[in-house]
Image (cartoon, rainbow, N blue to C red; front, side, top):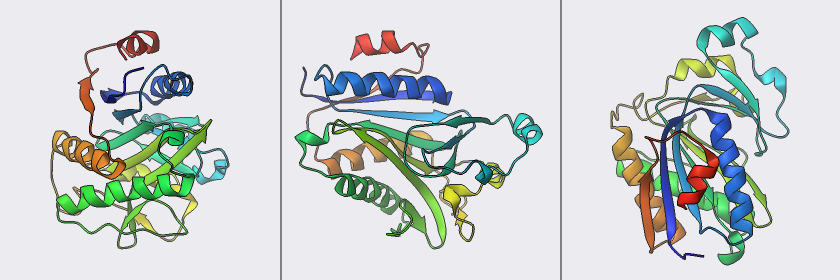
Length: 234
């Protein structure tokens, strides 16, 4: 197996095929067939529910979901309901924690630290909340975190609002929290391109997780998201 840490930029994709890719990579990472990998993606509009999510936290009606073009997917990550969509940078690390000495809490702490350092590069101070994981600006969440770890290998990850359409959060109770809001870089007056945010995100992720031998981001934007084809490239 190559020791290089690989980064794959999937561009804009529906949620379900990327979930399938994560699951396939997780199996191969457990077997040692691929190195640690970070997938970067913008999703088409979707509400995802974690393992213990309450369905009633999706408040939009079936008709409203159709009108907004938002699908609903129950997934294997921890946490409650959240939104993914264009203008949001989603990162899915497929990392073997057994090779790092990190436990689950350490891993989530490092994901939060990565986001905090990204925000600092744009002049913003992100904070943690020990009761509600993710990264906050004041009382508003700017980045959600939800993970699954099986056989010491991670999947799912973080979602940072860059220029996200925040009106789509009105159809849910984000993360099951009723008394706090959501925000984005654009809402806070930081109108930067997704390309620039990806560049900073890769830099900060590799810095926090101490990756030095790096390949990528490898663009996969011109390809159909066929898991077998992509896996053959890795």
